[in-house]
Every structure is written in structure tokens, then in C-alpha cells.
Image (cartoon, rainbow, N blue to C red; front, side, top):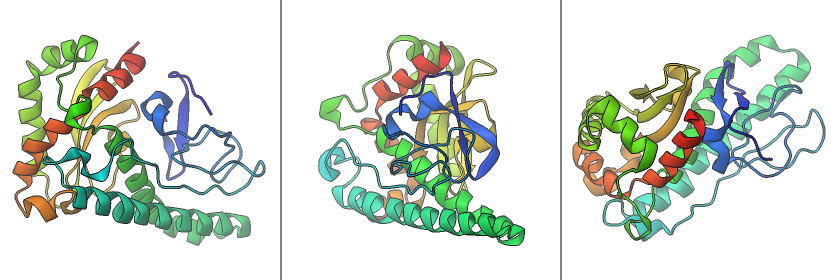
Length: 260
């Protein structure tokens, strides 16, 4: 399925919130989708199987990486990447699919109590899938342009809103290091205010939970599973080094399409 940048997709665990489709364009399945659970609005398809019928239940699959697990070394070790992708991300997907199946059954039975109980699991595991699918796109090996400063309109916007790329990195590192517990630090585009923003989200909450007009450009995972095997409990060192493999080209492409 191909979506234009002006379309929106509905997240099943945030029925009143929408994510601009272009922010997820490279993460969407090319196969035609109906809805994850209900007929009607277009739904997010991060690694979905093809639709079987108008009201069929969809399942999510682990997206492939465009680089080898060891390709981001020394910034991120191959061992961390393998575990992060195959174990942690896969676990979110497995639990997301399970929760969606239970939700489907509960809705078929009209079991409102179970529907309500399942919302936290759907939000947590669905958010984990959405966030990690973005995270892999935000990274690229140094030999393929990782860490190269953004050019064009995104570079100009960063200078305008933060003073410089160095100032932006300092702000994101500081907010990411200060985040209590687990979560994410984001560079996003506020489409309504037409400006860049830095936000943090707890646990696996996606950026859209901070506002329906926010589009993720760069998201950095600050859960310990993203760095502990290599950096132990020194999160600031991880945040300092991850910028060496940030894929600014991808972020710039999203920004160009979402800000036009």
C-alpha cells in the first residue's frame, strides 16, 4: 500500500490520535490492508500480512534491517543490535499480536470489560513496535552516511529553532539522560505550529501521544536494553556516541515531505 503524505493512519490503541502516514512511509507494508480490527479508517501497517477479508484480523511481523547487526560498531555493538532487534522488538510484536487477537475476540463477543483491560497491553506493545520500527530507520552505518549532518531544509530548520546542530544534540542528550526510568527522546516536527520540537516519552509511548500533529524525525531509545551490554549504566556515553550513526538523510526525507 502506498500512502501520500497528506493521508493519515489510525492507531488501534489510540483511537482518537493519528500519525501522518508519510512519517511511516518506509515502514508500511506494500500489501493492501483493510483494518487491524475494524472496517473503516486506514490502519497502521508496520509489517502487516495481507488482508484476508474486510473484517479480518491482521498480524504484525518483525521488519528486516537494511544493515548487518555489526554495521553500527563501534557506536552500537553487534550483540546489542541482534538482541534488541530479534529478542526485544520481536517480543513487542508477539505480545501486540496476542493482545489484538484477544481484543478481536472480545469485540466479537461484545465483552466491553475485556476490551478496556486490553488497552494498556495494546498501547505498550504496539508502541514498542511502532517506536522500534522508526528507530531502525534512524540508524545507518558510518560508511553509508551515518552521522553526516543534515543538509537542506532540515539543517536550516535546526539552526533556526535550536541555534545549531550541536545545540540540538546537547538538548536531546540532556533530556534523554535526565529521563527517569525507560523511554524515548525525540526530534519531531509539529505540523500545526510548523516548528521542530524535542520531546521525551515514557516507556513505549510513541511521539504522537504528546500531540496528534507531531511527526517523529529522530527517535532515540533510552531503555537499558538499547545500551547496557556495552555502556553499562552510563547512558550519557551511549547518547554521545549514537549520533555517529544517526541517519540524517532519512530524517531529512521525512521532514521534506511532512513540511511541504
